[in-house]
Amino acid sequence: MDIGNKMDKPETVVAMSKGPFYHAIYILINFSKGFFIPYLAESVLMLEAGMLSATILCAFIAHLWSPFRKFKQDTSFFWFILGVYVFMSPQFLYIFPLFYIISALILNSFPFGYLVAISGMLFAIWLSELPLYLLPTNVGVFLILLFALRSYLSDEIEAGKTWTIQSSFHNR
Image (cartoon, rainbow, N blue to C red; front, side):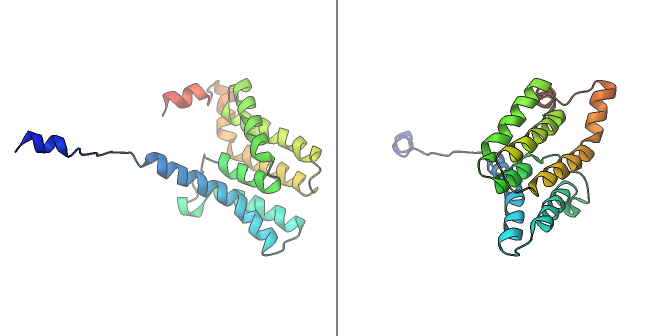
């Protein structure tokens, strides 16, 4: 084996993890579920306001307790909720994450950050003069999320155990 020939032909082998790619696909799927289910219900099925609201809430419940996961609760619901808010109004693409980041940092709690951000979105929906059926839809999302996060909230309130940025970093 001649070392000169080896030096003439540089080999470039890049080993890259597929984890970030799969995670990006997962995020895109969750966002798409939140956006396209109500979009298709409104544009293709021509559902009225009450049925569209029920469709959004049923899709959120199906996302949280999917039969494909044997009804185990999914804890990644940020992207789904963001998809629903972007369906409501494209400007919410920036408003909801901003509300969530600020409230999670101020309260030092992810579950309470979600609930405060969704409460803040209630006022954003009202101020942006969107259709009124979106207000009860937002309240429904809040109540479903409150039910889904009940164990985390009771742990934070009773035991002082928090789900914070720091604890998420240490438990990764």
